[in-house]
Image: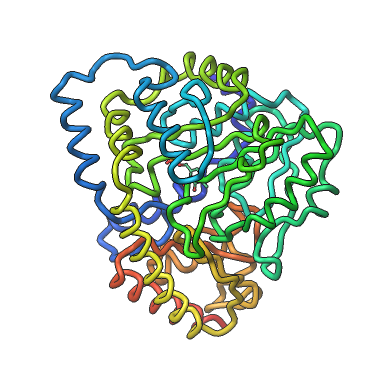
Length: 397
Ligand code: PLP
């Protein structure tokens, strides 16, 4: 039997692949430190869990409206006003089964086969793969550690062609932790003003995990607002990865309706009880999220300290999210026994197989010189994991 050729166009997420390999090693009795997954190790705040339990008890067991319950769409607008000073109406929003589905909806709604989508590297693993699934062409623009892994207006300008339909980026960024300032966003906005007809997908899922202060959204520029599609979700900021809830906001109603139409044929919308939890999350105090942020910030300092003790790594200090993304290229070409470490893929596999620490190769994010290490893990796991990484790297000759 034959499978569709579309499957050859994209890869499975490397993040999930590494987590699977780590699980398999663990099942064989090995003590594996998991630093590959992007998920908070905290529990979901109690008031959100209570809202979900109440929803279950109140029989939220029926199909929800495809674009989300009206009270949740209203809560999204409330959140966007409260946190970002942005004005949206409920009909500008669509609730989905995780930001991942929101992103897939956006791509399917905006690009045709052969269109180009500009993605600054490093980027989150799924951007390029879903673009390929949609038969469009991802146009990667490589940023450097020296520029803090941020795209410049000149680089953006140079990448635009008459086939460009969509620009996709995240701030705070996964995997680098870089955060665009208002001035930097204004620089990009200036380029977009010269090129109408390009949608801008602004993935803000790490908004609450920002160590440099005020989160800035590119949607704040009024003359671009109709073209900006904000993506956000509850996974990271509210420790709710398993509940699967994401959303978009865009003041172009046709785009919103397109996403709703696609979703209506694929999932019929997000879990009903989770949506009630999301109403509580977005309407009520975000103090628990801020407490998580404080803990992540302290862990970041711990991790930076431990990284500084490992020779041969280069790092751009992350301003947000919960990852470090060191350049490990000084280890390429080294060996342990007769095993050669030729690239970041080999290094990530070596760390997993030999040191029993799971990380993710930078290749998965479009940056072949780096690996991503998540610090969404307990301090004791971080100490154990970084200790083992240091020793394993020292064994490479
Ligand atoms: N966007 C970015 C940048 C992410 O890192 C992730 C998850 O890792 C997502 C979107 C998807 O999140 P969700 O769990 O809401 O699907």
